[in-house]
Length: 355
Image 1 (cartoon, one colour):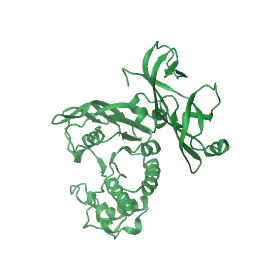
Image 2: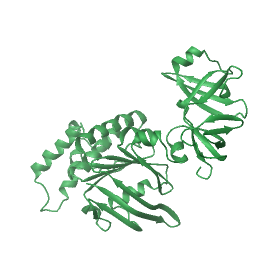
Image 3: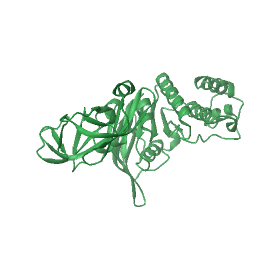
Image 4: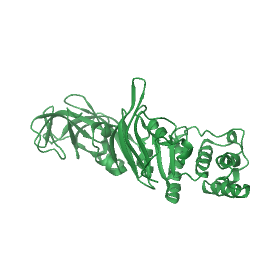
């Protein structure tokens, strides 16, 4: 099923939750709604599901306006962060619930229900837990049962609201890989809400990055990460270093140090901020006269394949983060207090009126 929202507006009192949001969600793809708390992503998900009423705009399912349809008529499966399983029902009965409450003329036979529940339990790899009750399960198991229950009614759309937010980091990582494999098998049009950048980048086909009720950028994970459209996107997707100064014909002057920038070669003497990620900064031992930013090594964390360096500029004491291979860090034989030269490999600038 294709999903489209057009000019969606939603207020809660004076608070603007969604401000004229229009989006397309491709059929059969997994889309992440990503952004900080309060940006409108859960409100948008609930409006698509029919759990929240919009103030203005349209929700189209397969091209038909579904804005006035009841949640039961939208054929949507919804998975909540805190599972919402019935504690007094067994795992089997929880999954069967949606099938048993269908109108009599649409309700499958008891044999068909039993067969379908066991098939779903196999799908989520928990068939051996069918007689258990939710309080007897781990968080990861409860979330998989919640997903099986949502799939039982054969939804045309699967909506997941922070599905792994209540789980610890290790279980969360395992479950998002599992969700990606499950989606590749089922190809149900799916939208999931998250504020976890790594989760969105790893799992989704498409990312919609939201901020203050508006869409900041839409695109494939690699495109959004490698080509951020706004300062907000740059800052939200991973760590970033900021260099304040003036840009002129492809060079950023930051406290007298000139750095080449990517893309902008036409601006003449504009106030700007340069953005560069820690892994896009090269470091070398300081040699008088060397080009780059002279820095002092304050701290190094070199465990695993990468070394994270905390550097202080010699000219203004602003901090710079750099990430280099641990092998190179060991070759340099660096000690805290050593003087280095830092050179951005990829510096993207945004003029101050857009920053």
